[in-house]
Length: 280
Image 1 (cartoon, rainbow, N blue to C red):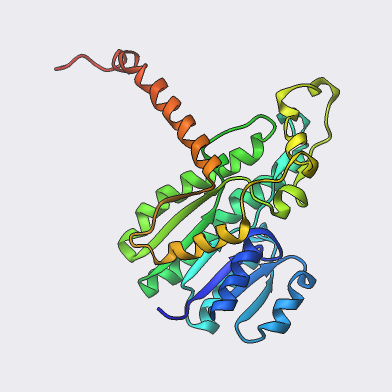
Image 2 (image 1 turned 120 degrees about the vertical axis):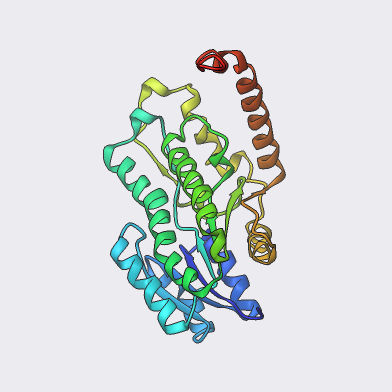
């Protein structure tokens, strides 16, 4: 397919912006969602035909469905969805407010779930489609001070892995993208920090403060290169279920998974001890 129609959430900055710019430069059409229209005024002016801006807070499920249905109807189809909108929230679990917990789940988890649910009927009717869920290597690896962020990413990864099996017979592929640290506003601009408690000073839960300070060194990931790899993944058949981006992220993920497997294998006798004996 020479020209694709993409729907990308959260295109004002970060991966969403990088992906959108590359797609428009190569001649694809993009429906990009933002919460602040001025953030993409330049794209609207430069690509008046191929870029369609939609105002959307992904916590608004009704509005989400309107955006998806209108794009599919007016443009004829949606070939690829990039579920990208989200943000980071740092702080020990008890430092987070109830409002912060609810907003994080509504944006990063429920918003992604409802976007996927909204687009599936259109892709199923068309007999094809690709859904890319932006996650993080933190969907496999957990760090202190990131509990709610991990909760949303581990949750959406489980959702996507299940749904991918449901929709494969309809020609729909799904990919979970797990980037490592990248030089985007996610880390150096949009990240939210809880009201910190003195009790957690010098605690691993506050280690993130060093990471968020650019003076301590920038993240190794190049968001433009990562965006290019994400776009290229759409041409891979079958769709890769997971795609790790960043050598450090992959090494960390492999280390955690190997330890997890070893821990489970050490429980072989324990697990078997709870079965009924053979023949009973």
